[in-house]
Image 1: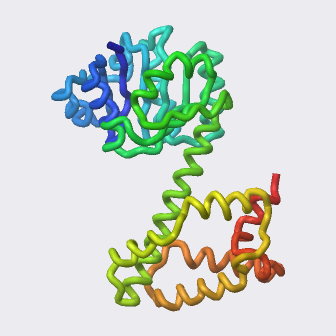
Image 2: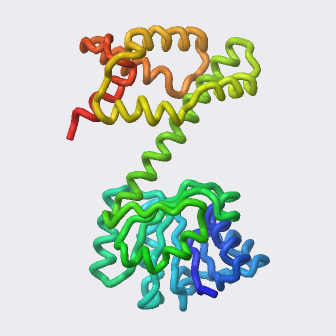
Image 3: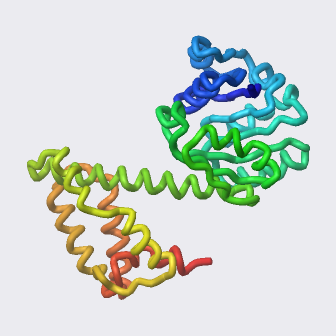
Length: 284
């Protein structure tokens, strides 16, 4: 049985703490809103008043917090009671630059720190599903590899570069947010066209998005914009989408249209529509 602490018990942190307690670990928890930590008591979690109290005797301290500023505040509050052999496991989505600086500073102070952002929601956290990335010293990762693997369906060690998991978390969240934005625009067109929204979503099952990432996405990363769907033709289709939506609010299509217009004005209309990413691969 491990003695662990969770600092931050919002939806995800609470789910992690609940699962750990059910698994048999001795779990302490702290949250800025005390009621959120107290809600975990029925699961066998000890609610504490301060981060320092929560980490007392813990060998692993899991941070599930809002942002970099909160991470810094909470670590500073916890450090006086942190055991010498404890490892900070930071699941917070953070800025890569600040993550790297934090890791370097803590290492200089002799504090063990791994950045471990996740792709999972509370239900997945309660059932060891979803994915977790890890960045930091390999020796630290190997010390907790088994324990972290028990928290997720997929554990991916990204390497010793401290900010690499942070960068990849932003990549993944960008895709999630981008897909959500496009779904919003598709549903807006469905509304404007009198099409049932659930039917519109169902029809998207005809598209193989994974294949698009593997094919078109790989070509984009290589800077290969040989046309299979010319940019100027794609721009025509976006015009039709905008006209279909009418004056309804849109999340993504207007910005896409504006970027297409820039590229076409620069003479790139005969390239593939994936030339939307040409500047991204042209710059170091």
